[in-house]
Image (cartoon, rainbow, N blue to C red; front, side, top):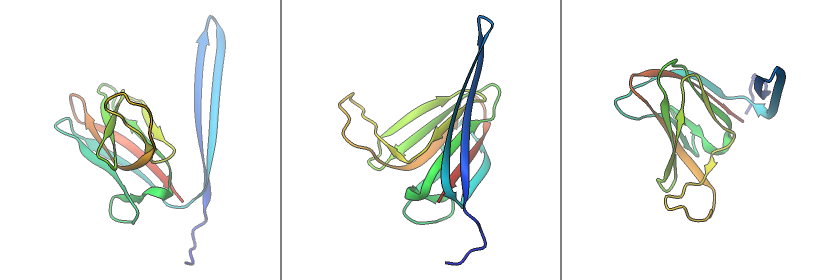
Length: 150
């Protein structure tokens, strides 16, 4: 396939700054993802009335759906200043895990493999994520997401 697009490197930097006892503490972690061409930034309204699907993952391209094995990085940021959101990650066997994302905070994944165990048993294997949904706490909130693929 011929394209006029050029693959780029996505650099993700997490910076933490804290002053404790008048001593500055600065922590920086950077990771790079090479050969990124498709990316999808979006702002989305998430209701409190029920969970909504934010992203779908499969082996094929479709509207609102990402090719699972090509996704290298995703981020969901709660853009509200008051309400938290619940982010639910669902795997192939329909087990889920939920993460509370406070106002202004971010949830990130660098691959679409996860393991959830409802009975506290030992780890068995990572499986593919099928979708990610979100629900707002008390009132509707905006989220921003960014997905980068190869």
